[in-house]
Length: 193
Ligand SMILES: [Ca+2]
Image (cartoon, rainbow, N blue to C red):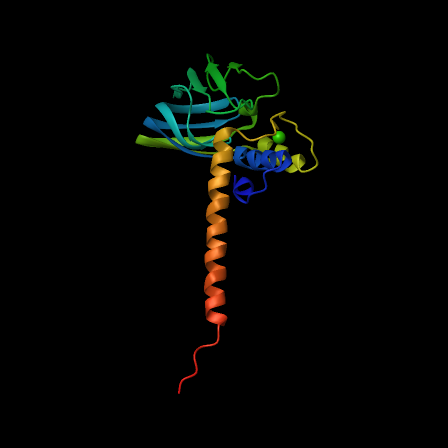
């Protein structure tokens, strides 16, 4: 996202920005309890719905009423981010203790759900902190154009384009304002009689 914010809008750089955003999850839901998950292995006691923050490579809320419940011996969770499909959605069910046994996705490629590490804990507000080593590898290899998760979809959405153009406009105004101040300060001051 920072790369996109820097104004580099080629499809290649847009994908590098998205790949970078995929690595970290920092979001919050509503509910009660705590949970830890390392790929398909999980343990916890939690019920939570909704998602707001950085998750699935996007900042914002999720598209469907996602959430999770986890009683360690049985679990279920669903997530689908807004925007262009890049294989970050999942519907995962666990019917045996500690293991997610069934993961469905709209995506044909490898699901990054299996390389995700995340913890959640809270009362009413349930923060979620996650890191995905698989996505980190995808980000690093992405600079060589190798796309192991098949999530390099290229061009910008209308929303992304609007955000970029607003940021570019703000940056240009700032630079012009700075230049104006520098020119003023370099002008010779009037001679004091
Ligand atoms: Ca990628």
